Length: 466
Image (cartoon, rainbow, N blue to C red; front, side, top):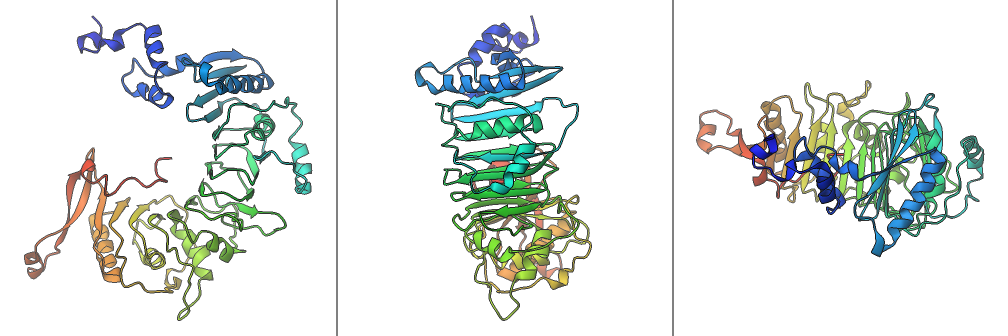
């Protein structure tokens, strides 16, 4: 009798082909989660993948056929959510389609003898590049590899995830994406060698753009109108937006016709260049004034926002008055200084949840001057602030000092939770009876509590967990 049978797990003891058949009836995300059941189920869901062979050109032809097969609602494959395309010499491409019309193209197992740097053009709404004459020369340099032009897909892709795209696949990706007329979300992740990225969304329905960990990226040009969410993690690169605007920004490209509800600006790796300029930064701040969820690094506030804020007694009327969730990434683990945080909070009158992470590996300016942080408006209270979640602080003493300063500055005492060393627990800050205060003791202390008791009050920030 094997281990599964001895422990009453009859299903796991079934033959592999039967288990694969069971998995084939599950939704895609549930099928992937079966890997966590036990070692018996690990990666078993991948057995349902078709295995094909050929060249990179053949792979994209297969992708076209696969998407068209999924377009027929009455004949959608139940046992295959995707396929693995073997390219030879140990290289393979994984293609996955989810029922919610999300397409995943994973090139992370494609090996390159010479990982050349490249420029990538993504034209989402299918219109011509007639107004981008200056891009044609760069585009020509990346067209040396022949890729057949795909036919329009009848399968309506709404979400596209591109992982580890290289110079070998970038041309085919550019041709394919022009057929995705209803694309709403685009994710680009871990593209080694990607030097510049040019995205033209036009009047398409692209609402969400995510760019993560493209370490060699130097510049990004974006043109679009309907974007609501921008999530970026990596070095602060050179950005440009729109037509007829040659200004390059050291932040994010904002176009006059869209306003963001969600902005993740995780630049803790620092700038891509030796010097930082805030050219056009007032316009950038104007475009994110209505953001509701924001991730911001302390050094970005110090270097790029503070210098352009007006000095007292003038008031900056473009505060983040719609911001309800803030993830603040700090770098000061030793001698923690909350001046920059407090100054920024004075621009956030409707903040409800505050998440503070101290990352000692985060970039910090060598010529910073914390005393130069400006205070434009002084809020008497952050009355909507309900919870503050702390992570990475050196000790409880520093955490309690921050709690006291929040009360001093804003006359508020939110629920404050901090990371615990115990599984499924957090530390909750509580205030002891006033008797301790009479005895000269600090009335504040942390107690351990279960996570599920506080989840509704303090869920994970939407930008965490990527």
